[in-house]
Amino acid sequence: MSRNSRRAKVLHPNNGRALAACEPTRASRMRVLLMCLCGVLSLSVILGLYLNADPWTSHLHHDTHLMKDRLSHKPGKYSVAQIKKFAAQVNGHRLWETHLRPLLIERVPGTAGSQIIRQHILTQLGSLSAGWTLEENSFVSPTPKGDVTFTNVLAVLEPSAPRRLLLACHHDSKILPPDPKNPQRVFVGASDSAVPCAIILELAAALDTQLKALKQQKSAVTLQLVFFDGEEAFEEWTDTDSLYGSRHLAELMERTPHPPGSTKTTLLQAVDLLVLLDLLGGLEPLIVSHFDNTARWFDRLIAAEKRLHKQGLLTSHPIEQSYFRKDFYLGPVQDDHIPFLNRGVSVLHLIPTPFPLFWHTLDDTEEKMHRPTVENLTRILAIFVAEYLSL
Image 1 (spheres, helix red, strand yellow):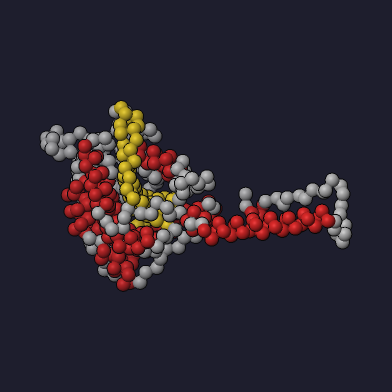
Image 2: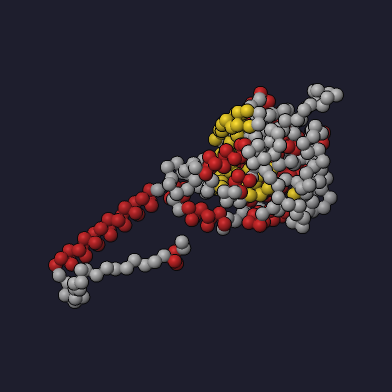
């Protein structure tokens, strides 16, 4: 109910006895004096709480302020020199050799491969100076293959901040039979979704210095990285055989008070925007805007691509607007954003449509990835994140 629609409280008569305004009694004087004293004491308490309250806590006690701040959030604006600086911080060699290649193995939930790549993600983020809070969010869920242990990998820059920008992808790989002619050739899901994981790791590394400063400033908006487990179906895609990690995390965040002990706001309400990356890595991806309520943020991606192109900071990029387009739409895609979208979270879904031809085949390998495109997308996202967080 809005403030304008609240009803005024009706004043009740004093048992039918009216006191003349010009003839106050001693009792009425005492009541007035007591009311004044109570008012002064109440004001003093409120003022003391306000002056001593942590600004994040006082902010979070008003969930309407969260919504207002989210809707009115304005990105930073950067000069040509600043754009060049952010783009130059993206290291293509580090992205490919340090972040991506260790991920190019089978990583089915609950297997040794999954544990290896989770440790890789944690090691990379743990080595940064920004000081990420890292967590492995494990749970057991029934699947067509029996009970399986899934583990989401979570990284939060400043857990106490009132609001969060979420960058997410899935780290698991689909179960596919190996090549019968070459049993060593297995499904490694380069675009699905090793490359998105590597892009997010590189963003954290490239912006490390600025993110460390953001944390020290106690900004109202922080960054969270999410690497979901169990996006893929074990058999055929259904509502119950898919999105294991994202379904679990969305439900968990919905019932987790934020800040701890709050009765008004949850971790889910703290999410400004979920940016989900999937199936990235191939040549000439066509990425479209899926949701009207995040169109202005999609426009920021378009603007970043154009600015970087004009400054000659994108390679193998012949036209200024190649990846992010608003003049095409091929329909929605089921993915890890759905459990969050269904709970009211705003979403940018960065996935090429149509899907790459090698989707869910053994050909989804490093050799099919287009390195200049991967580096270009990382630079564009670096500008987007820097602007959103005003780094």
